[in-house]
Amino acid sequence: MHSGTQFTQGLRLAMNSSPAWTVEAVRQARYHVVSSDHLFSQDNPALLTGCPDASLRAGERRLLVIDQNVDTLYGSQIREFFAFHDIGTTVLPLRADETVKQWDAVSQVVDAMNDFGIDRRREPVLAIGGGVLTDVVGFAASIYRRGTPYIRIPTTLIGLVDAGIGVKTGVNYASGKNRLGTYAPAVATFLDRSFLRSLDPRHLSNGLAEILKMALIRSEELFTLLETHGSAVHADRFQGTTADLARAADGIIAESIHLMLEELQPNLWESSLERCVDYGHTFSPTIEMHALPELLHGEAVVIDMALTTALATLRGDVTEAQADRIFAVIQALGLPLWNDALDDTALLGNALQDTVRHRDGLQRLPLPLGIGRHRFVNDVVPSELRKAASLLRRCAQDTVSSFVSAESLVRA
Image (tube, rainbow, N blue to C red; front, side, top):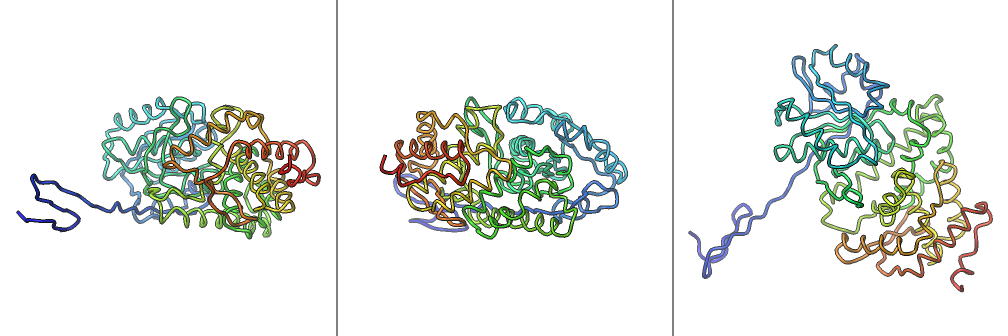
Protein backbone atom coordinates (compact mmCIF):
# COMPACT_ATOMS: atom_id res chain seq x y z
CA MET A 1 0.00 0.00 0.00
CA HIS A 2 1.07 3.56 -0.71
CA SER A 3 0.86 6.29 1.87
CA GLY A 4 -0.34 9.79 1.00
CA THR A 5 -1.85 10.42 -2.46
CA GLN A 6 -0.65 8.56 -5.52
CA PHE A 7 -1.68 8.85 -9.17
CA THR A 8 -1.22 5.71 -11.24
CA GLN A 9 -3.14 5.35 -14.50
CA GLY A 10 -5.95 7.51 -13.21
CA LEU A 11 -6.35 5.80 -9.84
CA ARG A 12 -5.67 7.64 -6.58
CA LEU A 13 -5.63 6.18 -3.10
CA ALA A 14 -5.79 8.47 -0.11
CA MET A 15 -4.89 6.99 3.26
CA ASN A 16 -6.13 9.03 6.15
CA SER A 17 -8.34 7.58 8.85
CA SER A 18 -9.70 5.15 6.24
CA PRO A 19 -8.92 4.45 2.58
CA ALA A 20 -10.69 6.30 -0.22
CA TRP A 21 -10.19 5.89 -3.97
CA THR A 22 -10.68 8.28 -6.86
CA VAL A 23 -10.96 6.81 -10.34
CA GLU A 24 -10.38 9.03 -13.37
CA ALA A 25 -10.96 7.80 -16.90
CA VAL A 26 -11.50 9.30 -20.32
CA ARG A 27 -14.36 8.03 -22.45
CA GLN A 28 -13.11 7.67 -25.97
CA ALA A 29 -15.50 7.91 -28.89
CA ARG A 30 -14.97 6.98 -32.50
CA TYR A 31 -17.69 6.89 -35.10
CA HIS A 32 -17.99 7.36 -38.82
CA VAL A 33 -20.29 9.40 -41.04
CA VAL A 34 -20.21 8.01 -44.57
CA SER A 35 -22.02 9.52 -47.54
CA SER A 36 -23.14 7.17 -50.31
CA ASP A 37 -26.24 7.54 -52.46
CA HIS A 38 -28.26 4.50 -53.59
CA LEU A 39 -26.93 2.58 -50.62
CA PHE A 40 -29.08 -0.49 -51.31
CA SER A 41 -28.19 -0.87 -54.96
CA GLN A 42 -26.70 -4.33 -55.27
CA ASP A 43 -23.57 -3.00 -56.95
CA ASN A 44 -22.89 -0.42 -54.21
CA PRO A 45 -20.34 -1.85 -51.71
CA ALA A 46 -20.49 1.10 -49.25
CA LEU A 47 -22.58 -0.69 -46.63
CA LEU A 48 -20.33 -3.73 -46.86
CA THR A 49 -16.89 -2.14 -46.83
CA GLY A 50 -17.36 1.63 -46.54
CA CYS A 51 -16.79 1.77 -42.78
CA PRO A 52 -13.67 0.13 -41.29
CA ASP A 53 -15.42 -0.52 -37.97
CA ALA A 54 -18.66 -1.95 -39.37
CA SER A 55 -17.90 -4.25 -42.27
CA LEU A 56 -20.45 -6.79 -43.48
CA ARG A 57 -19.50 -10.21 -44.85
CA ALA A 58 -21.34 -13.01 -46.58
CA GLY A 59 -22.74 -15.51 -44.11
CA GLU A 60 -23.29 -12.97 -41.36
CA ARG A 61 -26.69 -11.85 -40.10
CA ARG A 62 -28.26 -8.60 -38.98
CA LEU A 63 -31.33 -7.34 -37.16
CA LEU A 64 -32.93 -4.51 -39.13
CA VAL A 65 -35.33 -2.08 -37.47
CA ILE A 66 -37.13 -0.14 -40.20
CA ASP A 67 -39.65 2.66 -40.08
CA GLN A 68 -42.98 1.23 -41.30
CA ASN A 69 -43.30 3.87 -44.01
CA VAL A 70 -39.76 3.23 -45.25
CA ASP A 71 -40.46 -0.50 -45.24
CA THR A 72 -43.50 0.04 -47.45
CA LEU A 73 -41.49 2.06 -49.97
CA TYR A 74 -38.08 0.39 -49.87
CA GLY A 75 -38.48 -2.82 -47.89
CA SER A 76 -38.30 -5.15 -50.88
CA GLN A 77 -35.16 -3.48 -52.23
CA ILE A 78 -33.51 -3.59 -48.80
CA ARG A 79 -34.30 -7.28 -48.30
CA GLU A 80 -33.08 -8.12 -51.84
CA PHE A 81 -29.80 -6.30 -51.16
CA PHE A 82 -29.01 -8.40 -48.11
CA ALA A 83 -30.15 -11.63 -49.77
CA PHE A 84 -27.95 -10.87 -52.80
CA HIS A 85 -24.93 -10.51 -50.52
CA ASP A 86 -25.82 -13.66 -48.49
CA ILE A 87 -26.54 -11.81 -45.27
CA GLY A 88 -29.37 -13.18 -43.16
CA THR A 89 -31.83 -10.62 -41.84
CA THR A 90 -34.60 -10.37 -39.30
CA VAL A 91 -36.73 -7.31 -39.92
CA LEU A 92 -38.75 -5.36 -37.34
CA PRO A 93 -41.00 -2.75 -39.01
CA LEU A 94 -41.76 -0.08 -36.41
CA ARG A 95 -44.13 2.83 -36.38
CA ALA A 96 -41.95 5.84 -35.59
CA ASP A 97 -43.34 9.33 -35.11
CA GLU A 98 -43.29 11.80 -32.26
CA THR A 99 -46.62 10.60 -30.84
CA VAL A 100 -45.21 7.10 -30.22
CA LYS A 101 -41.67 8.10 -29.28
CA GLN A 102 -42.15 6.46 -25.89
CA TRP A 103 -40.80 3.64 -23.78
CA ASP A 104 -43.12 1.11 -25.46
CA ALA A 105 -41.23 1.58 -28.74
CA VAL A 106 -37.92 1.00 -26.97
CA SER A 107 -39.33 -2.15 -25.40
CA GLN A 108 -40.31 -3.51 -28.81
CA VAL A 109 -36.74 -3.07 -30.07
CA VAL A 110 -35.26 -4.62 -26.92
CA ASP A 111 -37.58 -7.62 -27.31
CA ALA A 112 -36.49 -8.02 -30.93
CA MET A 113 -32.82 -7.88 -29.95
CA ASN A 114 -33.38 -10.45 -27.24
CA ASP A 115 -35.34 -12.80 -29.52
CA PHE A 116 -32.66 -12.42 -32.20
CA GLY A 117 -30.02 -13.56 -29.71
CA ILE A 118 -27.76 -10.76 -30.76
CA ASP A 119 -24.00 -11.02 -30.41
CA ARG A 120 -23.39 -7.64 -28.85
CA ARG A 121 -19.76 -7.52 -29.98
CA ARG A 122 -20.13 -8.42 -33.63
CA GLU A 123 -23.72 -7.87 -34.78
CA PRO A 124 -24.66 -4.19 -34.78
CA VAL A 125 -28.35 -3.44 -35.11
CA LEU A 126 -29.29 -1.46 -38.22
CA ALA A 127 -31.74 1.43 -37.74
CA ILE A 128 -33.29 2.53 -41.04
CA GLY A 129 -35.65 5.49 -40.78
CA GLY A 130 -36.03 9.05 -39.63
CA GLY A 131 -34.75 10.76 -36.51
CA VAL A 132 -37.42 9.27 -34.24
CA LEU A 133 -36.58 5.74 -35.37
CA THR A 134 -32.82 6.19 -34.98
CA ASP A 135 -33.32 7.78 -31.54
CA VAL A 136 -35.45 4.86 -30.37
CA VAL A 137 -33.12 2.17 -31.72
CA GLY A 138 -30.05 3.97 -30.42
CA PHE A 139 -31.55 4.16 -26.94
CA ALA A 140 -32.55 0.50 -26.98
CA ALA A 141 -29.09 -0.55 -28.16
CA SER A 142 -27.38 1.56 -25.53
CA ILE A 143 -29.23 -0.13 -22.66
CA TYR A 144 -29.37 -3.72 -23.94
CA ARG A 145 -26.63 -5.61 -22.11
CA ARG A 146 -25.15 -2.22 -21.16
CA GLY A 147 -24.36 -1.36 -24.72
CA THR A 148 -24.84 -3.01 -28.10
CA PRO A 149 -23.42 -1.45 -31.29
CA TYR A 150 -25.79 -0.03 -33.85
CA ILE A 151 -25.66 1.57 -37.28
CA ARG A 152 -27.88 4.44 -38.42
CA ILE A 153 -29.22 4.85 -41.94
CA PRO A 154 -31.34 8.01 -41.77
CA THR A 155 -33.99 8.37 -44.44
CA THR A 156 -35.15 11.93 -43.73
CA LEU A 157 -33.35 15.23 -44.16
CA ILE A 158 -33.46 15.96 -40.43
CA GLY A 159 -31.89 12.54 -39.88
CA LEU A 160 -29.12 13.21 -42.39
CA VAL A 161 -28.06 16.59 -41.02
CA ASP A 162 -28.98 16.42 -37.32
CA ALA A 163 -30.43 13.38 -35.57
CA GLY A 164 -28.21 10.89 -37.39
CA ILE A 165 -24.80 12.43 -36.80
CA GLY A 166 -24.61 13.15 -33.06
CA VAL A 167 -24.37 10.83 -30.08
CA LYS A 168 -27.63 11.47 -28.24
CA THR A 169 -30.50 9.01 -28.11
CA GLY A 170 -33.82 9.35 -26.36
CA VAL A 171 -37.57 9.09 -26.08
CA ASN A 172 -40.21 11.32 -24.58
CA TYR A 173 -41.46 10.76 -21.06
CA ALA A 174 -44.63 12.22 -19.52
CA SER A 175 -44.83 15.69 -21.08
CA GLY A 176 -41.06 16.05 -21.49
CA LYS A 177 -39.19 15.93 -24.77
CA ASN A 178 -36.41 13.27 -24.77
CA ARG A 179 -36.50 12.93 -20.97
CA LEU A 180 -35.17 9.38 -21.18
CA GLY A 181 -31.99 8.90 -23.15
CA THR A 182 -28.29 8.24 -23.33
CA TYR A 183 -25.10 9.39 -25.01
CA ALA A 184 -24.39 6.48 -27.32
CA PRO A 185 -22.66 7.04 -30.66
CA ALA A 186 -23.52 4.69 -33.48
CA VAL A 187 -20.62 2.77 -34.96
CA ALA A 188 -21.46 4.47 -38.24
CA THR A 189 -24.06 6.59 -39.96
CA PHE A 190 -24.58 6.10 -43.68
CA LEU A 191 -26.06 9.09 -45.48
CA ASP A 192 -28.09 8.28 -48.59
CA ARG A 193 -29.69 11.33 -50.16
CA SER A 194 -31.67 9.23 -52.64
CA PHE A 195 -34.17 8.43 -49.87
CA LEU A 196 -35.24 12.08 -49.97
CA ARG A 197 -36.83 11.69 -53.40
CA SER A 198 -39.90 10.11 -51.79
CA LEU A 199 -40.02 12.43 -48.77
CA ASP A 200 -43.05 14.63 -48.24
CA PRO A 201 -42.23 18.34 -48.90
CA ARG A 202 -43.18 19.21 -45.33
CA HIS A 203 -40.58 16.78 -43.98
CA LEU A 204 -37.96 18.27 -46.26
CA SER A 205 -38.78 21.66 -44.76
CA ASN A 206 -38.52 20.04 -41.33
CA GLY A 207 -34.89 19.13 -42.02
CA LEU A 208 -34.12 22.49 -43.59
CA ALA A 209 -34.97 24.07 -40.22
CA GLU A 210 -31.94 22.40 -38.63
CA ILE A 211 -29.75 23.44 -41.56
CA LEU A 212 -30.98 27.02 -41.18
CA LYS A 213 -30.10 26.82 -37.48
CA MET A 214 -26.46 26.15 -38.30
CA ALA A 215 -26.46 28.96 -40.86
CA LEU A 216 -27.84 31.56 -38.47
CA ILE A 217 -25.37 30.83 -35.69
CA ARG A 218 -22.27 29.77 -37.62
CA SER A 219 -22.18 30.61 -41.31
CA GLU A 220 -23.44 33.55 -43.33
CA GLU A 221 -22.18 31.68 -46.41
CA LEU A 222 -24.53 28.78 -45.68
CA PHE A 223 -27.36 31.24 -45.07
CA THR A 224 -26.70 32.83 -48.47
CA LEU A 225 -26.79 29.39 -50.08
CA LEU A 226 -30.19 28.78 -48.52
CA GLU A 227 -31.38 32.25 -49.44
CA THR A 228 -30.29 31.80 -53.07
CA HIS A 229 -30.94 28.13 -53.74
CA GLY A 230 -32.90 26.71 -50.80
CA SER A 231 -36.34 26.87 -52.38
CA ALA A 232 -35.18 25.29 -55.65
CA VAL A 233 -33.20 22.57 -53.87
CA HIS A 234 -36.28 21.85 -51.74
CA ALA A 235 -38.45 21.53 -54.85
CA ASP A 236 -35.83 19.19 -56.35
CA ARG A 237 -35.79 17.12 -53.14
CA PHE A 238 -31.99 17.44 -52.97
CA GLN A 239 -31.65 15.06 -55.93
CA GLY A 240 -29.39 17.33 -58.03
CA THR A 241 -31.28 16.92 -61.29
CA THR A 242 -29.23 19.74 -62.85
CA ALA A 243 -25.58 20.64 -62.34
CA ASP A 244 -26.47 23.86 -60.50
CA LEU A 245 -28.94 22.09 -58.21
CA ALA A 246 -26.41 19.32 -57.54
CA ARG A 247 -23.74 21.84 -56.51
CA ALA A 248 -26.19 23.71 -54.28
CA ALA A 249 -27.54 20.54 -52.66
CA ASP A 250 -24.04 19.18 -52.08
CA GLY A 251 -22.91 22.47 -50.58
CA ILE A 252 -25.90 22.88 -48.29
CA ILE A 253 -25.77 19.37 -46.86
CA ALA A 254 -22.00 19.04 -46.61
CA GLU A 255 -21.53 22.45 -44.97
CA SER A 256 -24.33 21.97 -42.44
CA ILE A 257 -23.02 18.53 -41.44
CA HIS A 258 -19.46 19.79 -41.17
CA LEU A 259 -20.50 22.74 -39.00
CA MET A 260 -22.59 20.47 -36.76
CA LEU A 261 -19.78 17.94 -36.29
CA GLU A 262 -17.30 20.76 -35.71
CA GLU A 263 -19.46 21.92 -32.79
CA LEU A 264 -20.21 18.45 -31.44
CA GLN A 265 -16.77 16.81 -31.60
CA PRO A 266 -15.04 18.70 -28.75
CA ASN A 267 -18.13 18.49 -26.51
CA LEU A 268 -19.81 15.17 -27.25
CA TRP A 269 -20.79 14.50 -23.66
CA GLU A 270 -21.95 18.10 -23.13
CA SER A 271 -19.52 18.86 -20.33
CA SER A 272 -19.85 22.46 -21.50
CA LEU A 273 -23.45 23.63 -21.40
CA GLU A 274 -22.88 26.66 -23.60
CA ARG A 275 -23.68 24.95 -26.88
CA CYS A 276 -24.53 27.06 -29.90
CA VAL A 277 -26.27 24.03 -31.42
CA ASP A 278 -28.90 24.54 -28.71
CA TYR A 279 -30.09 27.53 -30.74
CA GLY A 280 -33.75 26.99 -31.46
CA HIS A 281 -33.99 24.42 -28.65
CA THR A 282 -34.81 26.61 -25.67
CA PHE A 283 -38.55 27.07 -26.16
CA SER A 284 -39.16 24.51 -28.91
CA PRO A 285 -39.26 21.34 -26.72
CA THR A 286 -42.11 22.81 -24.68
CA ILE A 287 -43.86 24.26 -27.73
CA GLU A 288 -43.53 20.98 -29.64
CA MET A 289 -44.92 18.83 -26.83
CA HIS A 290 -47.69 21.36 -26.12
CA ALA A 291 -48.77 21.43 -29.78
CA LEU A 292 -48.25 17.70 -30.47
CA PRO A 293 -49.03 16.41 -33.07
CA GLU A 294 -49.56 19.76 -34.81
CA LEU A 295 -45.87 20.61 -35.16
CA LEU A 296 -42.96 18.59 -36.44
CA HIS A 297 -39.67 18.92 -34.55
CA GLY A 298 -38.04 21.24 -37.09
CA GLU A 299 -41.16 23.39 -37.25
CA ALA A 300 -41.05 23.91 -33.49
CA VAL A 301 -37.33 24.68 -33.72
CA VAL A 302 -37.83 27.31 -36.43
CA ILE A 303 -40.61 28.99 -34.42
CA ASP A 304 -38.14 29.17 -31.52
CA MET A 305 -35.55 30.66 -33.90
CA ALA A 306 -38.06 33.20 -35.21
CA LEU A 307 -38.95 34.21 -31.65
CA THR A 308 -35.32 34.59 -30.60
CA THR A 309 -34.51 36.47 -33.81
CA ALA A 310 -37.24 38.92 -32.83
CA LEU A 311 -35.74 39.05 -29.33
CA ALA A 312 -32.28 39.75 -30.75
CA THR A 313 -33.78 42.48 -32.94
CA LEU A 314 -35.29 44.15 -29.90
CA ARG A 315 -31.85 44.03 -28.28
CA GLY A 316 -30.15 45.53 -31.31
CA ASP A 317 -28.11 42.40 -32.08
CA VAL A 318 -29.96 41.77 -35.34
CA THR A 319 -30.92 44.64 -37.65
CA GLU A 320 -34.42 44.91 -39.07
CA ALA A 321 -33.01 44.27 -42.54
CA GLN A 322 -31.33 41.07 -41.33
CA ALA A 323 -34.53 39.98 -39.59
CA ASP A 324 -36.42 40.60 -42.84
CA ARG A 325 -33.99 38.29 -44.66
CA ILE A 326 -34.23 35.60 -41.97
CA PHE A 327 -38.02 35.61 -41.92
CA ALA A 328 -38.15 35.60 -45.72
CA VAL A 329 -35.92 32.52 -45.89
CA ILE A 330 -38.00 30.75 -43.23
CA GLN A 331 -41.11 31.28 -45.32
CA ALA A 332 -39.36 30.39 -48.60
CA LEU A 333 -38.31 27.05 -47.12
CA GLY A 334 -41.93 26.21 -46.32
CA LEU A 335 -41.57 26.71 -42.58
CA PRO A 336 -43.89 28.50 -40.13
CA LEU A 337 -43.10 31.79 -38.42
CA TRP A 338 -45.80 31.52 -35.81
CA ASN A 339 -47.74 29.17 -33.58
CA ASP A 340 -50.47 30.23 -31.17
CA ALA A 341 -48.52 28.64 -28.33
CA LEU A 342 -46.44 31.84 -28.39
CA ASP A 343 -49.48 33.71 -27.10
CA ASP A 344 -49.15 31.79 -23.84
CA THR A 345 -46.65 33.82 -21.84
CA ALA A 346 -46.78 31.32 -18.98
CA LEU A 347 -45.84 28.51 -21.37
CA LEU A 348 -42.80 30.42 -22.59
CA GLY A 349 -41.84 31.27 -19.01
CA ASN A 350 -42.11 27.61 -18.03
CA ALA A 351 -39.97 26.65 -21.00
CA LEU A 352 -37.29 29.10 -19.93
CA GLN A 353 -37.39 27.79 -16.35
CA ASP A 354 -37.06 24.21 -17.59
CA THR A 355 -34.07 25.28 -19.69
CA VAL A 356 -32.43 26.83 -16.63
CA ARG A 357 -32.92 23.56 -14.74
CA HIS A 358 -31.16 21.42 -17.31
CA ARG A 359 -28.48 24.02 -18.12
CA ASP A 360 -27.22 24.01 -14.54
CA GLY A 361 -28.97 27.09 -13.19
CA LEU A 362 -28.30 29.51 -16.08
CA GLN A 363 -30.23 30.28 -19.24
CA ARG A 364 -27.18 29.91 -21.50
CA LEU A 365 -29.49 31.06 -24.28
CA PRO A 366 -27.80 31.36 -27.69
CA LEU A 367 -28.96 34.45 -29.58
CA PRO A 368 -27.94 35.45 -33.10
CA LEU A 369 -25.54 38.30 -33.70
CA GLY A 370 -26.49 39.40 -37.16
CA ILE A 371 -26.40 36.42 -39.50
CA GLY A 372 -23.77 33.73 -38.94
CA ARG A 373 -22.64 34.60 -35.43
CA HIS A 374 -24.04 34.21 -31.92
CA ARG A 375 -23.63 35.03 -28.26
CA PHE A 376 -24.96 33.55 -25.02
CA VAL A 377 -27.19 35.47 -22.62
CA ASN A 378 -28.53 34.75 -19.15
CA ASP A 379 -30.81 37.74 -18.58
CA VAL A 380 -33.95 37.20 -20.67
CA VAL A 381 -37.08 38.24 -18.76
CA PRO A 382 -40.77 37.49 -19.44
CA SER A 383 -41.54 41.03 -20.54
CA GLU A 384 -38.96 40.68 -23.34
CA LEU A 385 -40.56 37.46 -24.45
CA ARG A 386 -43.95 39.17 -24.63
CA LYS A 387 -42.53 41.97 -26.77
CA ALA A 388 -40.66 39.52 -29.00
CA ALA A 389 -43.81 37.44 -29.48
CA SER A 390 -45.78 40.58 -30.29
CA LEU A 391 -43.19 41.61 -32.87
CA LEU A 392 -43.18 38.15 -34.42
CA ARG A 393 -46.98 37.96 -34.54
CA ARG A 394 -47.15 41.21 -36.48
CA CYS A 395 -44.50 39.99 -38.88
CA ALA A 396 -46.32 36.71 -39.41
CA GLN A 397 -49.62 38.50 -40.04
CA ASP A 398 -48.17 41.03 -42.45
CA THR A 399 -45.67 40.64 -45.27
CA VAL A 400 -41.99 40.47 -44.42
CA SER A 401 -41.46 43.85 -46.06
CA SER A 402 -43.78 45.47 -43.52
CA PHE A 403 -41.68 44.30 -40.57
CA VAL A 404 -42.69 46.28 -37.51
CA SER A 405 -40.14 48.68 -36.05
CA ALA A 406 -38.38 47.11 -33.10
CA GLU A 407 -37.78 50.55 -31.66
CA SER A 408 -41.49 51.25 -31.27
CA LEU A 409 -41.89 48.02 -29.30
CA VAL A 410 -38.95 48.84 -27.06
CA ARG A 411 -40.67 52.11 -26.14
CA ALA A 412 -44.02 50.36 -25.57
